[in-house]
Each structure stands twice: as C-alpha cells, then as structure tokens.
Length: 352
Ligand SMILES: Nc1nc2c(c(=O)[nH]1)N[C@H]1C(S)=C(S)[C@@H](COP(=O)(O)O)O[C@H]1N2
Ligand SMILES: [Mo]
Image (cartoon, rainbow, N blue to C red; front, side, top):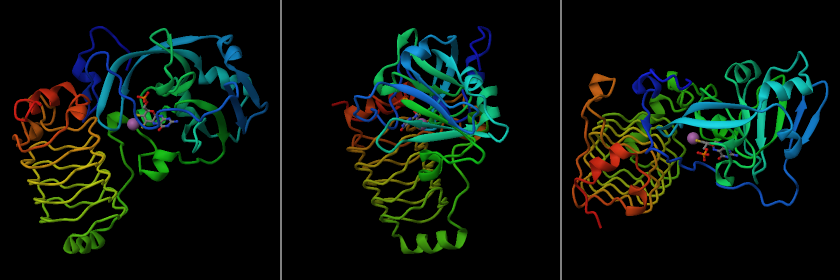
C-alpha cells in the first residue's frame, strides 16, 4: 500500500504484524555479500532475446524511479513508509526482451551460497518490483543489500533479495533458499498470511513423536502439538519453525539451540523451559507461563509476549504472558523487541 495520508494506520499493518520503533530497520538473514573485488554488475539472462550486463554506472544512467512502501517481514515486524529508488524491473526486462516462454524471474545474490528467491514475472511487474540502489535518498547500506538489491512491494520481505547480481528469466519456477530450505511460502502475500508452506508431518507421525518426547535434532517444521502434554520434552537443536504449541504443557522443556522462528506458544505452560541459543524470531508467547524460562543467547527479533487490546482478532485480545524476575531475557535481545513487547516485559523482569 502506498502512503495515502488519510489511510488509517491499522489498515496498513498486515495481519499478525507489529510496527518497529520509528526509524528502526532490523537486519535479517545474511549480513554481508561475498568478499570480492569484482566490480558490481547486474545481468539479465535466461529466456531473453538479448542477455545484458550492466555496471552500477550504467544502471544509474537508466530512468530512475522512486517509491514509498511498507515492509512486512515474515518474523512479524513491519516498517511503514520506507522510500527506495532505483530502476524498475519492468524497464530492465524491456531492455533484455523476455521470450514468450519466460514465466518466472529468479533473483540471485552475490553471497557465498548464491542466495536466491523467485516470483512469477507477471506478479513481479504488477507489484512494481524495483532494483534499488538508494533508501531515503542515501546509497543502500551494505548490510541492507547495498549497493544494489531487489525490492518487491506487497510481499513478505524475503522475496526482496539483497546484493542482487543475476536476474534470470525461466520457463519453470526455481524455489529460492528460504522457500526450499525453511519452508517459507512461495507466494508470500502478507495480507493472506502466506508465511509457510503446508506442514510435511502427518498426524500419525506427530502423535508418535509426541509420545516419545524426543524431538532432538529433528526437522519438524509446522508440526502441530497444540494442547499436548509434553512436559520434559527434549527439543534441543530441533527445527521447529512455525510449530504449533498453543496451550501445550512444556514445563522444563529443553529447546536449546532449536529453530523456533514463528513458533506458536499461545497460553503454553513453559515454566523453567530452556531457550538458550534458540532462534525465537517472530515466535508468539502471548499468554504463556514463562516463569523460570531462560532466553540467554536466544535471537528474539519479532517475538511477542502480549497481544494488544485493540488486536483485530477478539480471541487474541489482552492475552499476556506470565513473567517474573526468574524469566531470563538478556539485555542485548530486549533492545531488538518491538516497542509494545518491550514495554510489557520491562514491567516484570529484572532490568539489569
Ligand atoms: N541475499 C539475501 N537476501 C535476503 C536475505 C538473505 O538472507 N540473503 N534475507 C531476506 C529476508 S528473510 C528479509 S526479511 C530481508 C531483510 O532485509 P534487511 O536485512 O535489509 O531488513 O532480506 C531478504 N533478502
Ligand atoms: Mo524475513
């Protein structure tokens, strides 16, 4: 959505998202490109009539455009009114002339794993995808994808590849890294909450795992353990992105070094649970009992402990975690919490 002045703020925050503090822009995922002396350039290749390669200087000589968009990250933070400028994808493609067989566009970055993401070409153009070089009229910072990154308005931010160097047109889709390795939804529409692909663990397998109480080192994305008795669970080093633990009994559970990004712990019993060195980015602890829980070394951007009273879904209103001085949330991570969440937890925990 563009920044029409009379559009109410609430209508601009996609479901399940919360605002970052004004002026804050978290760094998510990879933090730097590959170490290389090669000059930066962008190539458009694949199913095109003319493959092209452009230097940064040549990019800056193309028609420039500017847009102000709202960023929605899958780990539940949104940043409104981010201004970017650069060259539209539509213009770059017009120079290379896509063949009729071209249906998808894949963006690959200059990183050690050649990180990528893809979109349908039609969608990418309709959304006004930009190859951006500037944010708020300043050259893009390197940790935000500078000197040149993709910006895809209207999709979760994982579609916006940082340090883009290859734009490839394809007749068949090629899943990007987050989509293939972490199960992020390939369509990524924040208004439809398309965060993750469908679960891969069926009910029978889930029931067996619950009975064993041993999830350690297993890959269990999106598993549904809602309302289960899992006290004493060993889930150390497990992959549990998007897992559902709503109203589960997890007292004393061990989640050490587990990946719990966007996991659901609403009203779960988590006394003395161990979250040391876990990834709980975007996890929802609203209404959970976290007395004695330990988040030392955890990564907590976007984690929630309370749902505000004006939450659009009435069943979520004023669901607040139980915390006290025995809940350990390290200072370094408190600084990364969203303003509403920080204000809530600071009432309970030891400030030192
Ligand atoms: N090359 C590359 N691009 C990437 C990522 C990444 O890890 N590597 N992470 C994505 C994700 S998940 C998000 S939310 C945004 C974060 O951009 P930012 O760090 O500028 O906020 O970049 C996206 N683009
Ligand atoms: Mo993200």
